Length: 157
Image 1 (tube, rainbow, N blue to C red):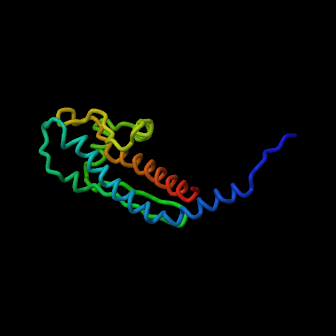
Image 2 (cartoon, rainbow, N blue to C red):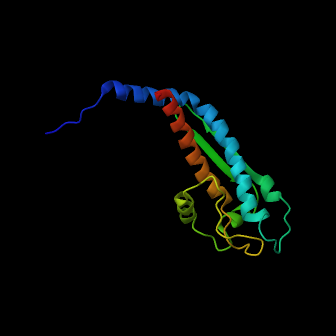
Image 3 (tube, rainbow, N blue to C red):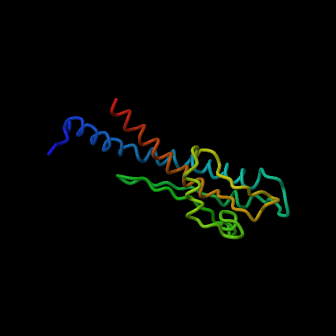
């Protein structure tokens, strides 16, 4: 039977680096919260406000309804993106109600989550989904991963 050689010191150093990086979680959460709110604004602009006008007045009410909150615990970060607009789900999933899991999978498959996620919604095609929240969720998750990995690498150097 063959065994796996493990460098005990390297493994301990790696685990210590992960534990030490947890001290950075509050700062990472604050940064991700701010960046995610910015992503929500860009997503609303790309899916609604910067598109060809159509039948509806653009009151900016949806834009003002967007919110991002991040909370750090000792071992993790929770980011919540939301809209308190009564028509948020119609914008997000479209008039025909696209399956949220499919929309999430499409957002996660995109190589660059920093760009707003659009699927064709405009003032002329207002019935299509405008996945503002979904795109921001994926952005937040990837950004946490990037910043946490960067923190661990800095401690490992």
